[in-house]
Amino acid sequence: MRFSPLRLLAALSLSAVTLAGCAVPSANMPVPSPMSSDASPAQLRANDAARQFVQVVETVEPVAEQLCRSQTRGVNCDFQIVVDDRLNQPPNAFQTVDSFGRPILAFNLGLINSVRNADELAFVMGHEAAHHIESHLTKTRETATLGAVIFAGTAAVMGADVEVIRNAEQMGAAVGARTYSKDFELEADQLGTIIAHRAGYDPVRGAAFFSRIPDPGNRFLGSHPPNAARMEIVRRTAAKLQ
Image 1: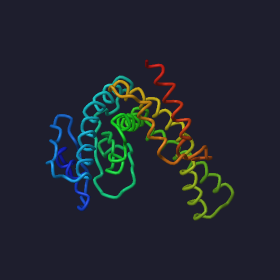
Image 2: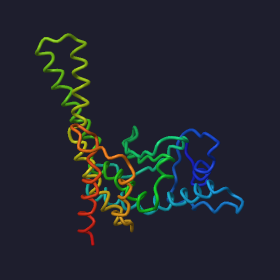
Image 3: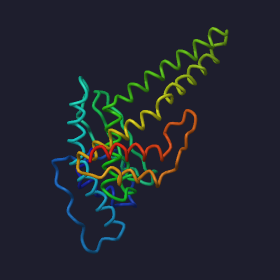
Image 4: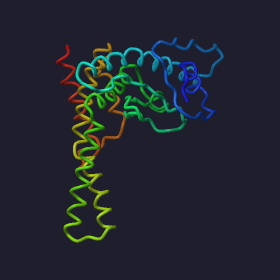
């Protein structure tokens, strides 16, 4: 289901109503008008969050698309921004592609409401766009396939039965998918910094978002690098943009 920013505003505001589907704010649509003066504090905060989201989309999306087109060939750079409007979900954002290969940048209400300023939202949006520009989904699938083949092949050579080979294949795919995931996150942080900066935001201030999420540390085959490493690459990249 697709909504205009006005419907997005309603999704952000009505905490008592569970909505299904996703919202797609258009860069060409008007920003929602303020609510009446008798609105509750929660409704006013949601109104501000909706307006901020639409404004960030309007400024970051064209920058991400222009950079995508300048750095890639044969890649669909027509980003579609969607909002998961299910309530009471933990903050989350991710990048994927639809069945036609169009890149999707997805955000849920938890994330939209949890950012403290437009810089944080712009940095997260730039980070997710960077995953697509760097072809991280494709690269992850390739390493997952390679891992599955190696693990399953090794088990087969050792004379394992079908069930063990199947388990080895699944384990290999998981290990393969995680092999470069930390590197991919840092690459997305670096390019996301550039995107946010070009869109007129402060990526260092935006990356302060990391200070409020759990630090994954430097775990073997972890999916994300330590928060300190992410902040460092953002600072170094931003310093070169001054």
